[in-house]
Every structure is written in C-alpha cells, then in structure tokens.
Length: 473
Image (tube, rainbow, N blue to C red; front, side, top):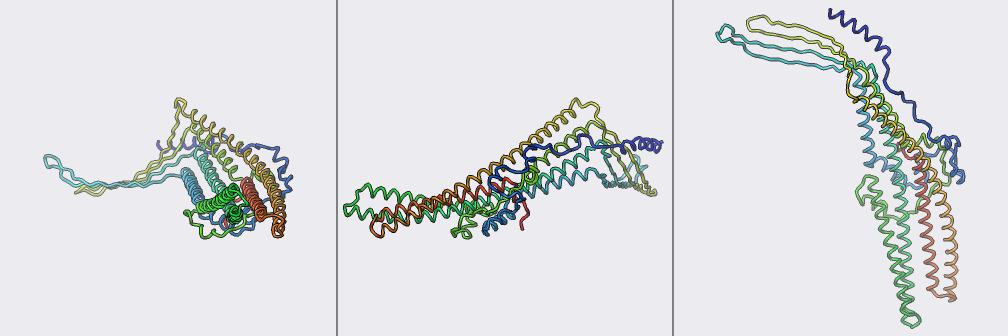
C-alpha cells in the first residue's frame, strides 16, 4: 500500500514539475531614462569645445604625460584600503551567491549513535548486558515548484554584479582623488617657490626704503608699508609650504601609507600637470554603459525584482522529498547479534493557507523596494548626464581662464622687463622696478592656479565619464 500511495503521489507531482516556473515578474531591464540625450548622439558642450567623439581612454592618467602621477595612481589602485574593502564585498556577495545555488541542491547528511547498558531485574531472573548501535544517511530536497530558490539565485547573481560595479566605481573615485591631490601638491609647491621669491623681493624693497628713510628721503609710513608687504609675502610662502605638506599626506593616505610616507619621494618641486591636447568624450549612450554607478543602480533594480518573485512564491505550496536509509545493531548478552536495514522516502507538502496578511505585506514591501530601486536608477542616470554636462562646462571655463591668465602674465613680464631697463639707466627707482617684478610673481601665481584649475576640471571630466576603473597594469 505504501509503495502504491507513493507512486500515485509522484504521478500527481510530475505534471507540476514539468510546468513549474518562477513566481513574480521576469526582469526586462530598466526603462530608457533620457532618450533625448541618447538620440541626439553627442554632448552639446563637447561640440562647443571641439572634443573628439570617439571612445576615451580608460587609463586617463597615462595621457597626461606625468610619470609620477601615473605611478601614484597605479599604486593607489593596487594598495588603497578602499579598494580592498570593495574586493571584500565582492567576495562576500559571491559567497552568498554560492550559498543560494547550493540551496537548490539536495541536502545529504549522516547520522550515527551507540549505547551500552545492563538490564537487571529485582529477583535476579534477568541479568544481562546490552549494546545498541545505529547509523544511516538522510537527505532532503526542495522541488522549488514556484521558483523561490531560483529567484534567490537570480537576486544573488545581481548583488554579486552590483558588488563588482561598486569596486569599479571605487576605482573611478580613487583615481580622480589621486589626480586632484597630486595637482594640489604641485600647485602648492609652485606657490611656495614663488612665495620665497616674493619674500626676497620684499626684503630688497624694505632695505632700499630703510636706506632712504635714514637719508631723510622717505617717511616712516613708507617703511611700515614695506614691512607689511614683507609679512604678506612670508605668509604666502608659509601657506604654500603647509598646503604642500597637507597634499602629500593626502596622497599618502590614498596610497595606503601613513602621513609622511611620501615626503622624501615628493620633496622636489614639480610642474602642475596639464591635460592632453586632444580629449575624447564619446556620446551619452556610451556614458550610460560605462559608468559603474549606473551599473550598480541597474543591478540593484534586478535584485529587487527577483526579491519580489521570492515574496510571491510564498503564496504557493513548498514540496520537498525526504529520504532515510539506515541500519541498526543490537547485542544482548547470551543471545545472537541482531541487525536490520531500513529505509523510507516521504514527499512533504507545506502550504500556509492562512497567515493573516503576512505574505501580502512582504510582497508589498518587496514591490516598494523595487519601485525605490527603479527611481534610484532614474536618478542615477539623470545625475550622470548632468555631471558630464557640468564637467564639460567647467572644463571649458577653466581653459578660457588659463588663456586669459597666461596672456596677462606675458604683458606684465614685458612691463617688468621695461621697468628693469629704466631702473638701470636711472629713469625710475629700483623700488618701482621691484613693484613691477612683484606684479609678475602675482600673475605667475595666478597662472599656476589656473593650470591647477584646468587639471582639476580635466580630472573631474574623466570621473564624470566613468573612466579609471580598468585593472592596473
């Protein structure tokens, strides 16, 4: 009777197994958020700046022409704790995915036990030793008719992909931070060097005014003015020195080093790096495919869609097969050893017919999370397009500011050269020539500030384009 009943039950389950499918909506991918930008096929700001439309280079730091910067970025990508954190998150997500896949496989275990004792009756009629041992294997397997476990694997796969995109996004952010910190370092070093030259000029000017004051040709106010100018120049030099030290420590942190870890290596003054002459930006569609944060948002949406299916699968019965195969040994003193082999197979059905709205609440919560993920995806895409447009505008402005600052510097250099010649022939005083040289130093400092601004805007542009997540060489 038992075999016939089991056979009939399996006959009823076979059609269910053949037609089983995963509950919930199948993921169709995100909707197009901004088809206008994609259909246009270009960034309007990029056309105004005459930038190339072909795909940009992932390792943008190799295009700058600064070997020190390239080495620092590569070392940061290899050694930064932020990347190690992202890698650990990937390992965790992959482990959880492996666990979800294992849930779909049978669970097989081994059981064993033994006992020894003695049986004695009060009248002494029974007096014997007894030993018992049993062992066997048990197995269980959920048939996953409603696809609950399959949706779990789907969600786990999406989360693993999201973790990988998070690692790529961390690389984009880190490469940009190193580029900006290195630019700040070189700008601060130039500021300090120019500040030292400015201090020397103000010291020369103060000495001349003091001589004239002693001769009665200048009043105390002129001396005080020169002393104030000297203090200002000293403060500017100190500001550059401190800014350079802070930038070096920032770079050390980004490379996974303690403060001061790069002091000896970056002690020499270097030029502010400049962007390459040709910059490629491709098109908005490429941007949406390339940016890791957009991939993260899309994978989160896919995972939340699978979670909805998991919640909906709770409406359907869970069917599992349970089996047991074992043996037993019994030894009674004075009698023969008895043993036996037994086995059983049992299909189990679990179905919650009345849960007072718990399943419905879980489904509604999962759908709300999916709606949130979809809105977050749309927000991420729009933010990326806005980020790229803003970065292009800032780069164009920085380029114009550098052109104007360079032109002004050339004019002031010509003026200072003429003032130097006139001072040599006595047409003007040496103090007036020093004032002209001071103006040249100020304009040169402004040029370096604009160079740093242009490089910072370039790094920001590469970051907005989603570049820098390539695996280091």
